[in-house]
Image (cartoon, rainbow, N blue to C red; front, side, top):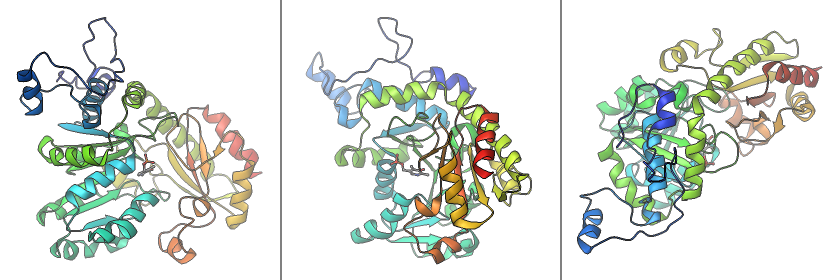
Length: 389
Ligand SMILES: *Cc1c(COP(=O)(O)O)cnc(C)c1O
């Protein structure tokens, strides 16, 4: 392992890079599937874990993947990280390793996560429990019943609700349960759940870590011993990241802080501009002092993120008209890329829920979720103004 320099920006550039014999300043792509050895003794050193090394790419034992994983670990100040072919792959490997006695999901979560926990894992005998933010009093009793993993996102989609990572970790640990935080929305630039007490961090690297809407990948970070059993699930479910994607993701990570810091700043400008717009009923952004989660966000986040949600006056149809009139914001449901995106949650991410269920989660049809890219803030505000006019 290379020693990790203290500052995140430096780690993003330098952590985990291979010392290339030809002088490449960054890790080359080894598309190789298998790696040869000088002797059987050398094979056994790697197979029996006495030496780190390359062996077989699906195992993740490939220099390009291993270099990426060292960089991913450095981003969250973790002992170790595994890279996956998607965010859902990272989540499902974690759930199968640590969730078998039951998983408690707090707050709103990604649609795929909710489907996995509510419809698929129960068919394997793995119970999923769901508590919204105002139901956390029920957490200890679920943990007493044996649930071994608490999983949540913070901020959540699309209301950007904050969950207290330190407080929830304390409750879970008191009952012998593990805590995993999906840190996709915040990114490691803005929030480090492990430092606040969580045991695992999951990322859909498809979003901010990849940052250009051009790759699908996932990551899981945590303590080395805790991650060890997840490795076998990843290996045998065949969920490892491809070396080409690993190199593409490592490239993106080198510029992660620059991108996210700009996205934070632009999102704040948009939030302020939209708050005083007569066509906007409400702005949900963790960096606004009147946002319900502002104090908690200030405590557990270094930056407030590039995601904001605006509620349009005039209801769902008015919001659809605004979304359809935006020109710079592309109408697409993902997030975290260099290009700004807009989505109306009731038509995409939360389309599968009944209106009552959406209301229970505080999601109105008039909401538009914005993922702020790297365009000029004034241009983005002008685009919103013309669409709202
Ligand atoms: C997109 C997303 C996922 C799933 O990630 P994939 O890379 O698409 O598998 C999980 N959690 C959150 C918060 C997401 O936004």
